[in-house]
Length: 417
Image 1 (cartoon, helix red, strand yellow):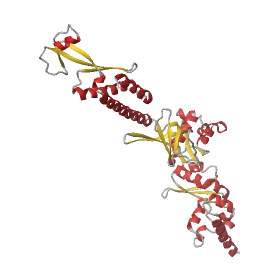
Image 2: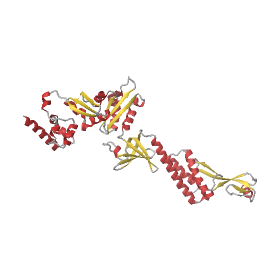
Image 3: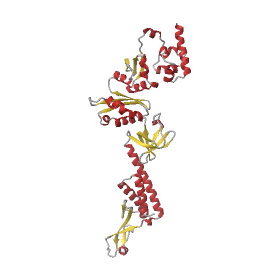
Image 4: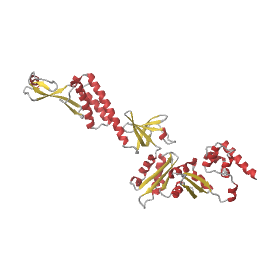
């Protein structure tokens, strides 16, 4: 392999890996200085000239001319008689420059140099990828699905860099196949044994925040700020926003005319229901907004226990709790309190005759009682007011469990009669 072949091989690396010119020249020079050091020991008297565009590389050996017989170091000095073989009019004290034939290093040394070159370029590429994506943490990137595994998906960006989307960072209803383009946020970048690992996420709050920033110009310009986000990825999200301009309605700006701005985000998040909430420092008002669209009659706040009791009309309880209890769970995370839902009833007689579910603890398993309470059914009549189908749909109870519970509760009121 000659110098031209070695330069050509380096040019291939440069094109593939996007190495800048100064770095490219320095790496190549270091590789040849290593070759020179192994052969000659001292490299101070050697000049390496590289032209990466043309694929030229020249090594020049500089030596001082001394009298014949006065050469002490053949690396730095040359006898006058030897110098005059190069050029007849040389004199003592002048310097000679001789071009080194790269083949004089031997084929084995040249091959080793190429391997060293490949290794150095590979390390540079890893460093470049790490730096590039370290600066992109929290930003949205697009990549193509290359391979799908059980616990993660391997994606390739436009430069062929490998990105990972773990199963835990995918929305529950996400489904991708090879060749699909995926959008996700860069969650973290790690170096493991010198190799960069870029972890993407579609469930991180930052993904929703950046999607909103892209769709809502007022957020991008800083006129509206996102105060808080809580999510059950793929199901529901609550986003608290605040406007620094009194003329701008933050909720309306985020939703857009007829939902034009929010619809694209909802589609990207697999139909995740997004509630936009206007920020307030008033805790009671924030609870009301967080539990919307349910209408709250009254609120009791226990600061010590970090619990909030919310009282609603019976027909508002299911709205406050939401499907599978997601709405009330997110509202609690949003305000930082545990929220308990209670029913208000205008019928005092019915209320007096009703029986708390805890009274049936000897007949109904506690986990079943807890499951019913989770959907706001804390009394016998509140359970009987719902159909079997609705109870099965909104709880983790089986049809058989619901039928048994209904029999027990109905029997209680039959005995009273």
